[in-house]
Amino acid sequence: MTKHQNLLKWNISDLAKAMKISEEDVKDYFKDGRRASFIIERLLNYEVFHGRLPPNEGTDYDIIDNEEGKWEVRTLTKDGVYFCPSYMVGSGRNFDEDGFIRKLNNIKGYVVADITKFPNIPFWIVPKNKVLSWWKRKLLGYNTKISRQKALKLLNEI
Image (cartoon, rainbow, N blue to C red; front, top):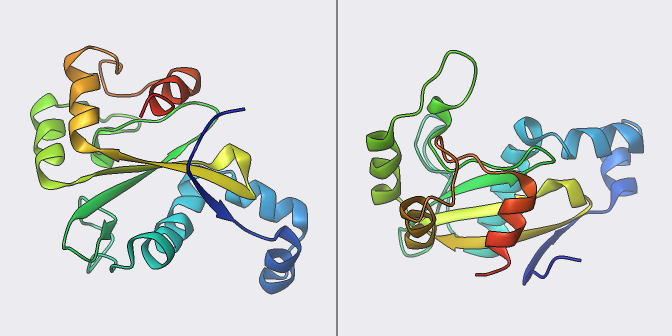
């Protein structure tokens, strides 16, 4: 069992009923990082940060806290997690260290949510200095992606 201090909780039956889909579909949806991230961002914003969402989806952060700090939300999946900007991830896209460092300079940190544990999703608040330290110590992959196992090890040391 992984240690964590924070937990997002949902009721699968209530979600299935509200969304008018099966409980299995709810589980599949919320365990897909591309889909679940939008909902997780909103829940973290309203219940944890008490801030606001950025003006549009094209910003390089996901949440503005109540002190105007900017946070990026990442989902930890069975494949791991990455910390570089989203525009650097995917087919035909390339990692750029300067862009990664610029991103770190513009945010307070990351929130990493382990969606594999849905409906009870543990999450970690990771200050940007911690991610920068991991990068400098070469604990992140060349493009900042790390495996699930390595991510849990690093997150549990916070």
